[in-house]
Length: 162
Image 1 (cartoon, rainbow, N blue to C red):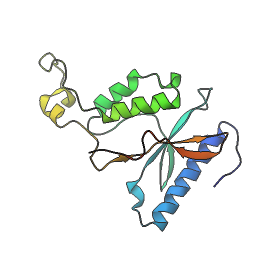
Image 2: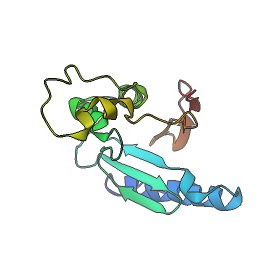
Image 3: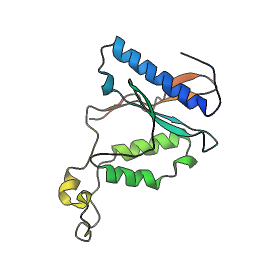
Image 4: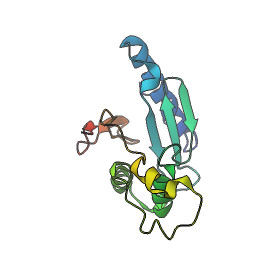
């Protein structure tokens, strides 16, 4: 559903609301479990104040920061912090994010030299480090303001992990 393009501050909220509404309608009409699908909407702008990130599901939309939680979050967050996301175009940002999420966990360079009590530094936690399930499907699409259309990025059509 297309609506009016509003100011930089209102347009991301409008897009997030519409995406959430669409996800709720899909969940209700297609008998899909509402919480089994999650979207991440990144709105990029020339001004830092207008750039934002929303987590979207059938229950609504929520402004978030790029931050991983749960198993393996230490490794993922370290990777997120190393990238200056504001200097990347959307294609490069998507590539970097997918590389970060799809990369297999790497063993710490020196487990014996790490004296911290952090559970993420032990050999056992490395063996059990977070990874995406092989049932995970990733789809990337772009909504351009000028065309007012959502376009699937063909390089990643339903990237299925095996």
